[in-house]
Length: 240
Image: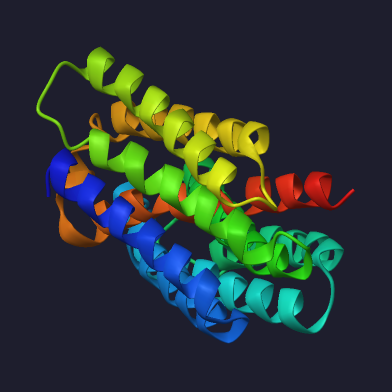
């Protein structure tokens, strides 16, 4: 799966998050969890970790725990989930029976995957604020637009620059149209999405495994999922 196809899936994932954000919190919860499970199935393979199945299981369980905690408790309780995720990553390594080659790399890869799915739960916490769906739509629209730019068949630097500009412009426009968000916060969210999209476009172009289906889907969804906590923090600023 090439970069242009991954960009399409990133844009599609962001667009579905935007639609779910306007639908209901339950719909958004189901979507975020589903995207996390797809990410979990491909992330260890993207990094070519020695124990892909076990790593995917740990990441999937952490994703489920994070979503449940955000829905039934508070966003701050995710710190406990993250702490237990690190413990789970080490327990996973202790259960290995292959001599534990590339131990540090395996732990780091699994923990980084859990960080992404825990961050994804931030999309659900945004619903607690006044801006709620409007901010979800603004951020998701900026991500989708920036990701669409990376599908262009052009020089890497040019694509990266265009993704940043387009992400900022779409964030500005969407934020201005949605009064609860505002133009300046929309611009900041859009620029952040554009910069991260550009960086990941360059990074994943160097991963041979990202051309396979499940690893490529994980690479495509990384931006959408990892943006959850930053978007939540912006919502907290807007809500005062």
